[in-house]
Length: 369
Image (cartoon, rainbow, N blue to C red; front, side, top):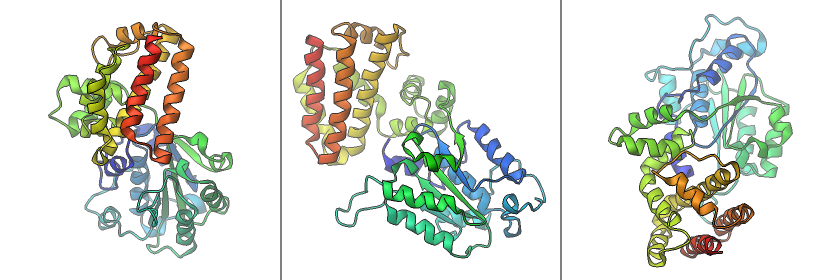
């Protein structure tokens, strides 16, 4: 999923739907109501599943608490009433300031633009975390909770992670840190150990379809099913797929794959040229992600003998046919090499058209072997 799409889906102005993660909401509310509110929370789960939505939902909830109640969980003060939901009133002036970005008690650390290149950095750097340290070192501008959201924490470089660790070791009073992490295993163990974890799990197909139908009522039942299956239970990914024409892209990709070992070279060059265009950056990233996922499903099906769920009719049968064209070890080796090439292409700015042609040519060569 592209970062730009994720930010638009899970901006504080976004829908209040929690995408079925009520259990995580209850876990946080139990800590809040029971005066056991931890100073750091780690929200984990696949990309597009609603982690940032939950983080902002918590931030808005805390911002809406009366200033005199802030710190109730830290200092043992009795709460006047028990909170039953994280839902906040959109007409509340405090919430409106949060939405507009003008609330002084909330700060976000995320990847920033490199002043030299004008492009988004690959990592959250130490300067981004130092802003959090400066924020927490000052008196609360709002008189209530101070909340910092790190999105995504697993994108921090080593220096940034160490700086955040120091903040976690000496947490400021009346403050909450919310770390969003797609791959929590990349975080320092010492960071994970200082956080309470809210783990969000993939949703069922029907739940993803319901979210999609609400956001994209014009989609056909077949498109809803295809998008729900491609998303692997992540509604945010499903909405990105819908916005970028993911079903059509997948059909084009599947057309090349299901024709293996034959490859339509002229058609491949045409599609690769379209995806390599600068304006097609998001479509290219989506395409290569779907390509790796398709090959992973083929390998998993060949190894287990259990057919995968079809995105397109008859797909699992084609996967089984193709998987028998060469050995399982060779398919796994190619999948790993393709992943490394895609990552290297981003790192050193390789010609994307040539990368795509090489990926499919490698598939064709292996299938013919």
